[in-house]
Amino acid sequence: MAREIRETPILFGEDARRFLARMEERRTESPEARARRLRDYEFMKKAYELGMQEKRAREAANGGVDPWFKKA
Image 1 (spheres, rainbow, N blue to C red):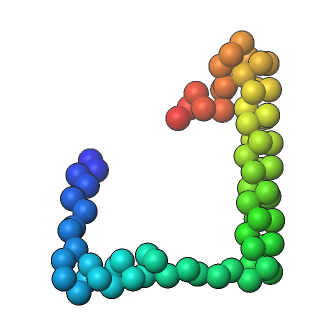
Image 2 (image 1 turned 90 degrees about the vertical axis):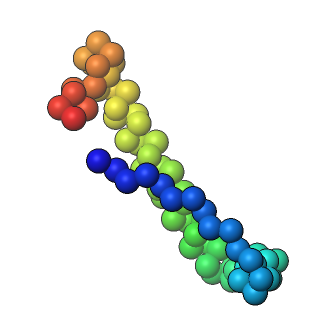
């Protein structure tokens, strides 16, 4: 069985100040890193869409049931 999720701790004092300072800090991204991130995102999006097309085709061929997931 899964364990229950603990409460998020509340930050006080110096920890809270450090956290807020890091949250306000702007992180820049190089154009190469941005292009790589967007390229990876598009690749994963296409892979997902292809997988969903195959799933819908299996469902259409089997009367609305996907036999691939029937075993799980």
